Image 1 (spheres, rainbow, N blue to C red):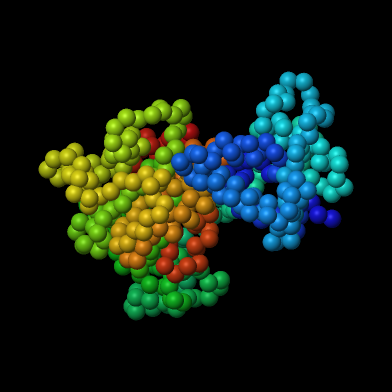
Image 2 (cartoon, helix red, strand yellow):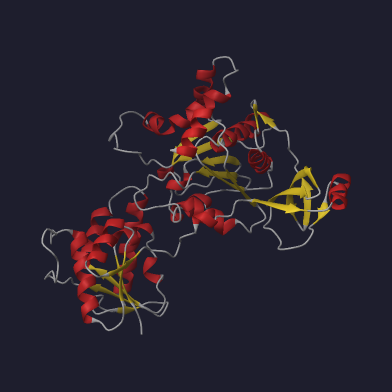
Length: 433
C-alpha cells in the first residue's frame, strides 16, 4: 500500500528535487507551500534559486495533467497539490489557523483521516514536527541526504604489526597492506608494535601499500604541525595530487590556519597556483546586523574577519604585517569571494579554501565543487557541531555529506582533528562548555 508524504516548504527549499525522493509513493504539496515558494522566488541567494527551480519543475509537471488531481512522476510515484482543508479539524485553541505551518498541519491531519495508507508530514522544522506529534500526525525529517555524524569517517586508522613487519617498513619505506579490511584511498595509518609499545610509525595507504609521510616536518609560513592529526592534514594540503581536502574539527584545532598557511606557501613561494581564493557562507551567529554599506570588499570584511585574523597571525614576523594582507588582496594574489557570486564561475589553477562549510547544504557544496577548474585544489574546513543555518544539523550539512560521499575517491582526502592548539583556554572551552 503506497504511503503519502506531505512536504513542508523547507524541504523543497533545501532540495528542490525532493519530490522525486519518495519512490513509488504519493507526494502531496499543500497549497500554502506554493504560496511560501512564491514569496521566496525573488531572493538573490541559494534559497531563492531553489524556489525558482521548484516552480519551474511544478510548471513542467502541470503539462502532464491537473496537479490538483495528481500526476505521475518518473520514479513511479504520484504528485498532487492539495487545495487545503479549510476547516481546521481537531486543532486545540491557541493555534493561529492562518499561519502557513498550521494550514500544512491541517492538510496532513485531513489526509490521515481520509486515506487508508499511512500519511507522513516531512519537514525540517523541529517545532512543526513537535506540533504534529501533539496532534497525532506522523512526522519525520527529510533524511535522504543525512549522514550519521557520530560514525563519520575520520581518515585515520590504527593497526598492530609484528617487529619484522615494522623493520621492513623502515628499511624499504613501504609495506604491503598486512591484511584485514582494505582502507579507503589516502587513509592515514598509525602502525604500532604490540610487543614494543614505544615503537610506532605514521604512514598513508595508497595502491595496496603503506608509505611514510612525505612532509612529516613541513613548515609553512612559520607554521608546523603540533600533533599527528595536524601532520596528516598538512600531508594532504601539501600534496598537489589530492584535489579535494576536507578538514573537520572543533574550534582551535588549526584547520583554517593550516589551510591558509599551505595556500600561501603554494601560491607565493612555490607558484603552484595562480591565486588563493577564500570563501565562506554569509550566515550570522545571533541577530543579523542587516544592510552593510560600502563596496563588495567592505561588505565582506565583517564576515571575513576571521580570515584576516589568521592572515595577520601568519604575517606576524613580516614588516607591515597588518598591511600585507590588504596588499595581497589589492594585487589579486588573494581573493575573498562571497558564495553568492561563485555560481557560474569556472576556477582553474587556484588554491580554493571554503571555510565554515558546515553551514552549507549538500546542494550548495555540489555547486562549489563543480566550479573547480583544471589544476585547482579545493579545501573545505568546518565544525559540524557549530552550525548557524536554521535547517541544517551535524548529520544533514554539506560538509558531513561531502566527507562521506568522497571518501573512496583517490584524489580526495579527509582528516578529523580533535586536539585544540589555539590556547589552553580555547581547548578548555571546546572540551568543557
